[in-house]
Structures are given as structure tokens and as C-alpha cells.
Length: 64
Image (cartoon, rainbow, N blue to C red; front, side, top):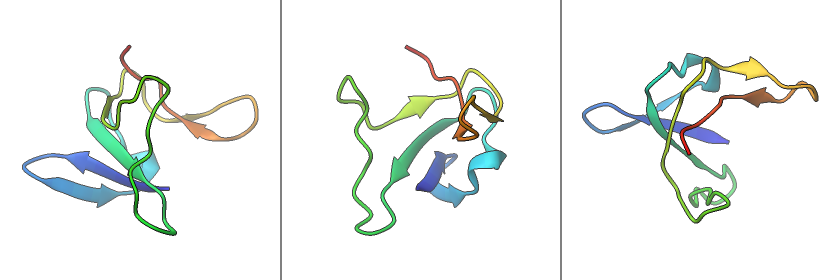
């Protein structure tokens, strides 16, 4: 996934660079379409630092 964080504008970063409180969105690398969450949202706010989940997938906890 392409990760973009909102500072003054949307900026590409590495997933591991996310910090608590960051507003971010994800895009599919093959077509750059936005990832849509379970509730139809495309922007997310982190409430944890990045970590590997039980399946070794990079993850952050998000608001909501």
C-alpha cells in the first residue's frame, strides 16, 4: 500500500513512520485508488504506534 500522511498536504511516507495522532490514508499501488474502510471512510487517525499483528502484518490502531 501507498501511505500518505496529512501535514500541510498529503505526503507519501513509509508505514513505519506513522505516529500517534497522524491523519493518514492508503492507496493501492497498482492503480492509486484510495483504500475504503469498513464504514466507507478513506481517512484514518492513528491511536497507536505501528506494530506487527499476530500474522506479522504491519498494523496501527485507529480511531473509531
